[in-house]
Amino acid sequence: MSDYQPPFHITDKAITLLAEISEQIGRITVLQEGNVNPHLRRENRIRTIHSSLAIEHNSLSLEQVTAILNGKRVLGKPNEIKEVQNAYDAYELMLTLNPSSIEDLLKAHKAMMNGLVKESGRFRSGGVGIFDGEVLIHMAPPARFVPEHIHNLFTWYQQAKFHPLIKSAI
Image 1 (cartoon, rainbow, N blue to C red):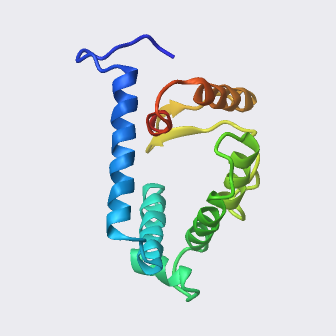
Image 2: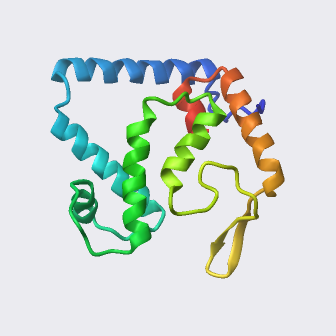
């Protein structure tokens, strides 16, 4: 962790209190409105899946994602349809996973990447980078360092004193 303090002097304690207050407001709101009905919960999950996949350049529309998850056939790239199905499977799995477990991280990766990449459920074995057209924007660490980096990240997460919401954003 860094000793950096922003110029407006927000402290770790202030961030933690702010996040805890927000969390409590969320709980109160849910209690006041009653339980979220299953239809709304499913609709939110579909929208979340659509938005998450759109960030990764999946071109399927919200209507197509909904149709796929309702078991209907749609016209689309097979890999994009598989991404939708995998994302849904991963969401179903989510509540059974331990967020502090590297093994469960790999289990989630396997669900998300099943049938899409050879290394689903395993750390990558090759190099990767982020490109803007032909221009390399960011080169990821070499594959041999990934398990150690993930281990260090999980250790930091467990030891850091920030609120879990703040840690997950970092």
